[in-house]
Image (cartoon, rainbow, N blue to C red):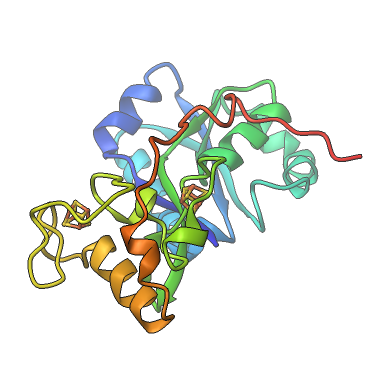
Amino acid sequence: MISVTEQKPLEEILQSLDKCQAVYLVGCGTCTTMLHTGGKAEVLEMKDKLEAAGKKIAGWMVIPTACDEVSKYALQENDQEIEAADCLLVMSCAYGVQNVSQWTDKPALPAVNTLFIGAEYTPGEFSEVCRQCGDCVLAWTGGICPVTACAKGLLNGPCGGTNEGKCEVDPEKDCAWTLIYNRLEKQGRLDLFEKEQAPKNYQAVVRPGKITVK
Ligand code: SF4
Ligand code: SF4
């Protein structure tokens, strides 16, 4: 599983850096490196772009995993360069940005948008598989999530627009409910397809989610 991200437009990044003349760049050696949105190559590319826009780069680093505890130590090791910066531009997912923000008094600004937590079934192709709704229906749907994989999030599908196994919203994508039908048929459980699902409780998890494990 991986945090799937895309880089923000440079114009938006420059707007967020409006009050920062000296910038310290932080990349992540895990998810954004895999997605080519915040690894070493993209950090150096961003350095060039910001310098061309008149910013001073106080320094840069790529934290092995920006969303875990190691961020604290990586920031401590580079505290002199960070001290010389007005802000940090963090090229990791939002988890990493929030983590880095905890360990510095400087503003830590996001350079990427976090889209979803995805799985890589085919090399280089990332798919969202779960929206963490807190009320899982996979038992009835052959292990394929309609909340996530159906463009309309239908619990009782398919809709009238499914066309030769493709989704009417995005013909490039498979219709989730056709996949569910095929899977249940293969499992000899097509009776589940007839079962009407009651409206879903989309507030099963009170946000922000928090749980204590004893
Ligand atoms: S129903 Fe879908 S979104 Fe909800 S927990 Fe199960 S897989 Fe995740
Ligand atoms: S075509 Fe299939 S995946 Fe697309 S919205 Fe309709 S039921 Fe959902």
